[in-house]
Image (cartoon, rainbow, N blue to C red; front, side, top):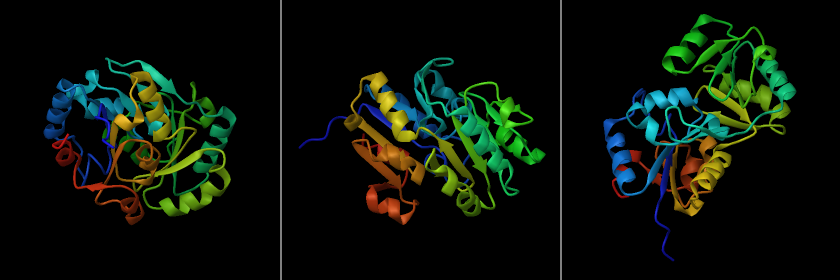
Length: 259
């Protein structure tokens, strides 16, 4: 049976498009995105990052593509800025309680996500600087989780030195209430959505079959998306368990040459 033609290409960012410490998307990828658009194929970043951070990374094409953000909890259409096509909101009381649990861990900082603002209750200035300037997020400081003035779509623990310890402290209580996902080497994300949820909502909006999607990832938070699409790819640097489940590739740019 012939596979359906690809109409949408989705890719994770950190560890997939940005590898080996890279901080900028390669010019070659933008060439592929423009070529694919001419051929009727849309490109979509699919990341745990915030919309504003993703727009900065994809500035040359940002007005022309959709974005799957916050591990699928927010999906934006093309535009400047694009419309919010979907958002998946967490229970407010539970999100605040989870945020307080993260704040109580000495080795973790909390990031509370609205649809396009990161709310921080920082214990030190380094965390705020990292999120504001390195990650490129819209940032607002809050004295407590209760001061966040909008719907909460994601709560994250930032723990670059103690990810496994923080995961062990939080997941037994919270993974039955929210979806917990390790996102890179420093982040543990909690949402009601995942990248699979966001992909379903995006494809519904675009009237595209999941079988017509190619997707790239490198970590366990990409699995819900990769498990749904017609052509999944995992990076060759991924965990062995993931390489057993999905076809591997050395780079997104190299794979796209065959599309």
